[in-house]
Image (cartoon, rainbow, N blue to C red; front, side, top):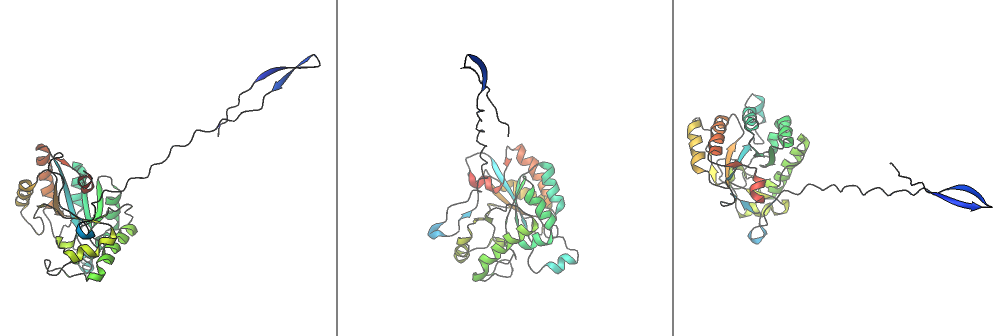
Length: 273
């Protein structure tokens, strides 16, 4: 600490003699330190009817030409043996393309994916270009008859979501978003009720890219370009084995949408606007 001392010289008369009198140093109070502002919480929607978990499908159609590209990093709880045998549930080339093109994006990640690829999960979670959101731990369906996926029982739904957040923390993702995407996009009233105490906003989409299991990148590109409107949420995938064309689609879609005047944003920005 640096203290400023004001020296005051006064003339004092004592027995007709002049002597110098030193004034008592006056410390100066330090200026109050700047208050550190805590980062604001990510925007979420208010609970839906009956207090159920709210569901977000797209942003405003009138507040600018924005679009959110979202990528599901799928891996079910029972696919570890397939990954060990060499199947790739990640897609580093896609992430590299998004970075090269400077495209913000939201990655809906399963907890099992984060366990399989912790370094990639951590890299995504710490890169300001991306935000990581919850896609369950197991990628088991929250309803019956959902694209052949195994199902989570009603009493395990909340635990499955919370287990995913725990997996993100172990992988080093510092701030996973309070957004949840149902596996397969399948949900019902029971599922929405089961997650009310978790405090998440369920995020769906209004543009299906069709990249899952697709082999024709041009067809997927056309589907995306024909579907996007202001405020759109596009669902795509971040898994090489199940969506091998996605990187090529992104490299074609991004410049075309920018040419049309669209700006890419994360889901949090759409919800907040």
